[in-house]
Image 1 (cartoon, one colour):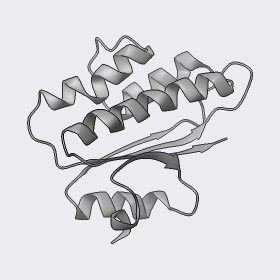
Image 2 (tube, helix red, strand yellow):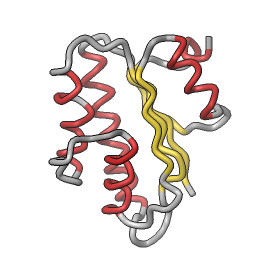
Image 3 (cartoon, helix red, strand yellow):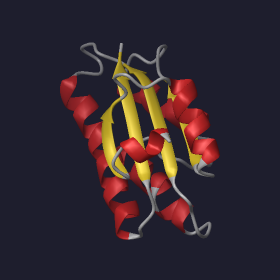
Image 4 (cartoon, one colour):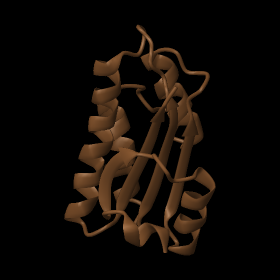
Length: 131
């Protein structure tokens, strides 16, 4: 089983994993699979909009780091018991409008979400790649 080889609460590069395999593993484990292809995103605003659309966030999503954290944690937690999450952020931008600092801040939100779910004994695995 693919997910058994990956720590349950982690944010890591997608490396040798294939998106299709992660999706099937999440489905097999009855976990949420959240996928955002960010190839078209060039700025922080673009990244937030793409993630919000891909993850079907509510219309009131504030398109900032705090709102992203709230949507990945509190909003979902209030929906009831969760079996786990497999998140894929494919092709994060790598340009002056979304530089290394912006990428690290974004990934920190997902690391914080992984910690949030770890405290609740819910697996949260996030995989990412860069353009």
